[in-house]
Image (cartoon, rainbow, N blue to C red; front, side, top):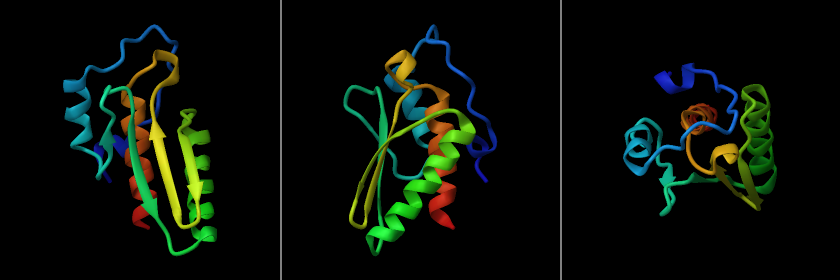
Length: 111
């Protein structure tokens, strides 16, 4: 289990400063194959599955983790594909919460 996956998301009040690119890059190295957006305000990752049912099941598992953490991604679901986008909406950028959730999603996909 990664250090990030052991952490818990902390409620964001909207007064926090979003990460700058350099801060995001440091944490990006601790998650598997997530991509930093050009504006450094979000990270994303595409997952592939053998069919729609598996993709939907994964999406529901991501949703359950998001509810537990109180930090909610944007998700695109298609036949055999799920793309997850993480950003901290309250600050219009990235926070540690995004990387914590990414690490937990990575563990989910590994099982």
